[in-house]
Image 1 (spheres, rainbow, N blue to C red):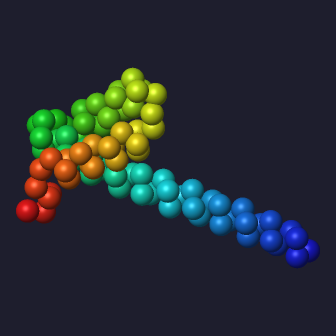
Image 2: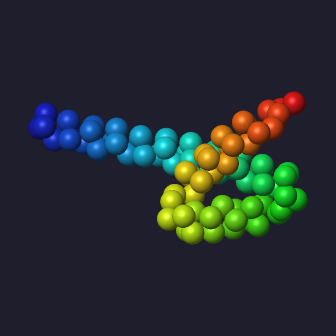
Length: 82
């Protein structure tokens, strides 16, 4: 009984971490889309398509591409809130 509960708890903890990771990835993707929309004058759909195409071409996750873009934008330009 205790082992079963421990296994269920462990599984739920892993699922929670996965969901948190997915949420963080979505936030980063949204920020990257915003950067592309502002800097290139793209629609939200076109910005997402560009991120997805770049990820596919580089055989990387879209979240990784988005994080790279957000990091680069932070280094190259003023903060978004200024």
